[in-house]
Image (cartoon, rainbow, N blue to C red; front, side, top):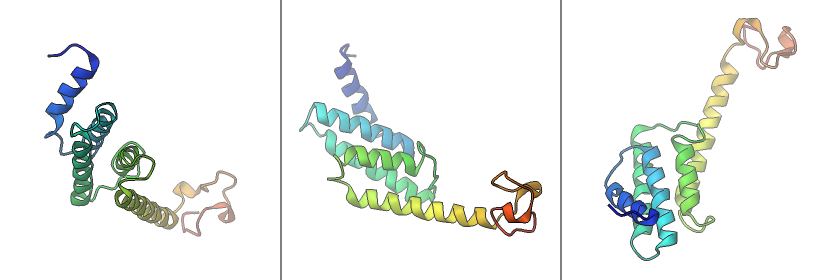
Length: 141
């Protein structure tokens, strides 16, 4: 095994080309490959990064897991896609799809929250226990 840091990174990245069936792992590996492409352009790292990003998209499409967390699921995909995009010049379709997934998920979560009664008769904004202070006109307020 090589001893200098770049050679170690290249060795590890080479072994990871065929690894991972997980969104976060694929995104992390894609960002590693992208960084190697910046350091060693023309050695196939850009294509390897693109393949890993595409794998992450496929996993999300297959599982339907569009977790709104920042560093998980679509958050990780958005971070990786932006990193690989070189300031939005590439992967615009993936970035647009991530934006759509985030908006759809936030809208669904907002609707679900609006339909949920206040817990224990307490208002969501913490100002009063009167019905007017609740975030919704739910029976629990």
